Image (cartoon, rainbow, N blue to C red):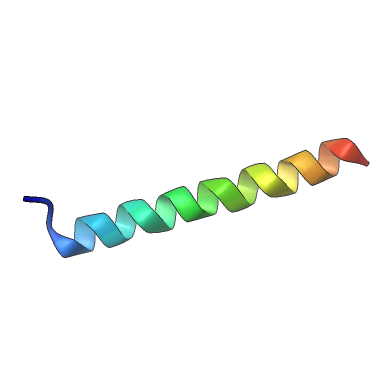
Length: 30
């Protein structure tokens, strides 16, 4: 079973990755 802290950390990382990719996509689109 995955610890709660590990799940939270992974979700935070995935969220930051999504935000970073979105920002990068917007930058390239301009």
